[in-house]
Image (cartoon, rainbow, N blue to C red):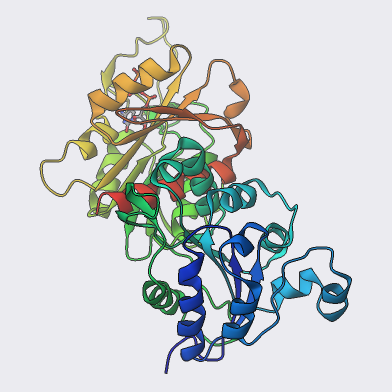
Length: 412
Ligand code: CTP
């Protein structure tokens, strides 16, 4: 029996030529025992008629946010809650943009905002619209909000162009829905959005402490908050996550195994012991130097005046892991804390340490980043630098986890 049997699908159809495939999709869903409640946008009605959709689904078609009859029979809030699955097929660039920004000016977008389900989008659009940075930004925002994106696939399009943008075929969508439906008890949420399931991640976070003697050390202001939030976001996205943490004042993130260390040398050893991994995120503020001859006993004041502390360079954990000849994690993400020339410095760090992405922070301009709950970052890779708006460290972490899932997916 199909996992879709007995499930109630709220199907939003937005206005694209791929809407003709949705007629077959409804048939395939119903064949598998699902009930389908259709919602059409105004533009969708230019491509398929409410009558054909109503006939195939055997249900009333909803299309109006301000319909007195519809609101009396079933208010839009209830409509968005009464389903097990919320599927948008086809999902146009416009509806995805509205959903990404929380707009609600028609029934479809209002349902997406009011739902308590994980929205599933099957995008369909012209290849240039799909690859446009605005659509890609919206896609990332939807992914980081936990939405599931199915497709699009590559191929020749109705407009004559070739490339990604075609809606998945109805049977592919049905198979993807069946895969997404969890096997757990029916009282649990039907959908599990875990794009990093089956992946293993190692995250470093916090400062390191480099001993001068048994009671004194050199350290820095890192609170560990951003790294802890990233570990939690990766775990929430399904990755088996190990956090190698310097000394911080934070509770262990949910679903994450924590290995506590003090010095940079210990941190590197701990990371090595946690390998292999698919993902390595180096968020720790590792001390660049350690004390050459750390005293075994507490250093005493004496007639010779203050002691001279000689420093030696610490191993670069990020560069070491990123340059492993065998067993290098598939995606290595570093951080760059800079006080000037943020992007050029981050780009040279990316090249020097040979990592895949750098999350760059301007720590000179915004001292509040240390220990604060907000962050503002620029995501730098070999070819681009994208400034993200200021957001909470938790939100930035969710976006980073979504970006990691995206990059791993495109490396397949
Ligand atoms: N890093 C590391 N091991 C070190 C130093 C840094 O793994 N010994 C990692 C940090 O976790 C971060 C990245 O390298 O992901 C950049 O750290 P940052 O302190 O900004 O740069 P540095 O390597 O110290 O370079 P610079 O002195 O030029 O700022």
